[in-house]
Image (cartoon, rainbow over all chains, first blue to last red; front, top):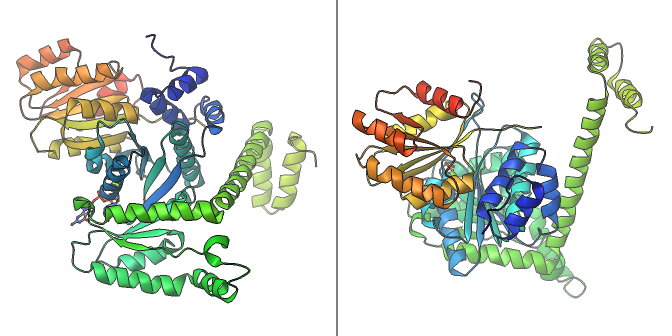
Length: 345
Length: 135
Ligand SMILES: Nc1nc2c(ncn2[C@@H]2O[C@H](COP(=O)(O)OP(=O)(O)OP(=O)(O)O)[C@@H](O)[C@H]2O)c(=O)[nH]1
Ligand SMILES: [Mg+2]
């Protein structure tokens, strides 16, 4: 058998189609590093994507996300479903390096060709991270993995943004230490499709469940409006299968270290998957995602084009003029666009 | 925009359960700007090779305190070769007697670091092996 060519776009694409895991890993690196192969690789993979169900797992540090991903993946594997895992950890703002330790909790998945785990550092870029994660998910999707689980530490806006890549977002809570307050602060309740209250072997799990139930009933009124709405108009619009918002996030108690409650959690995720498909919400989400993505890429491409074409001196001069209030920024932008001739105005 | 990062797998093969040293090195490498994938204790050679492949690392660092390095290192090399990663830079750290250092080099281990090694030495060594400017 001749060894596959892992240096070119065509070679990498052919190899990954044949299930070559080294090619898969290389493609992910090209995308993370933004090499010149990244775009043609993504373009070549795009048509093969869109089949996987993408699951985001987020929550405060140490709540047991990786342990839960390990347990969830084992259950998917028992059902014959393949799983790609993307484990995101923060890049150190001081050194630019990162310590990616999620694999430590996923050792049960080693040696299974139906699983592929990749650790990713945030690398500092905010909007860029969500895009990079979505692109890596696309690679795993195109490689044929049926579920893709993205683990992120839910502490900031960037993690919330990553959740927008996911079809189903699982928010992981653990008892104690004002977790509930943290969740609200990060705006995490709003993105949850499913809750896992992990470490249910610990004191206070029931209280966390109660707190979540209360906050759900207070904080996300639209979902309840929809239900009322549906009940008020049962003939013309049954809420359960017409309105894409009619999903109330279920709450599952889990003990990830003992794999307790995890079957129920996986069933809950799968119920949400079916719900998205049957209600048409998945299509709607895909369309929204495509619109956002197109808009963002277009903005980047045009920005880069203008910046590439403009002389550095003229940008510097305009910045100077705007800073000195000799010129307003709107006029400056128009001049820059006119000067570079990138866009007919 | 190209932002290449050096990726290093830090693993502990074999049965000894002390990973303090490995964690110290892992943190030092992070502080040097590397992306460090830490896999934890009791890794089999196949687990190490598989993780190195999935994570597409430039360097594999093994921490071995058990004294079993002369058996474990060739086993890891064999596993790396099996997945096509024989070219990855291989480092071994731990309690390695002088007479074994030469033998490990002969086996193709690029760097062998004893207990007295400063983490800066390891960082410099990686930069040099990969042909990179020190940060
Ligand atoms: N008692 C108990 N401990 C758990 C449970 N699940 C995870 N842990 C422990 O909690 C600690 C953190 O688990 P991880 O899975 O690494 O948590 P994480 O949320 O991925 O952590 P980060 O990625 O660092 O944010 C580990 O020591 C786990 O063994 C559980 O259900 N019960
Ligand atoms: Mg984790």
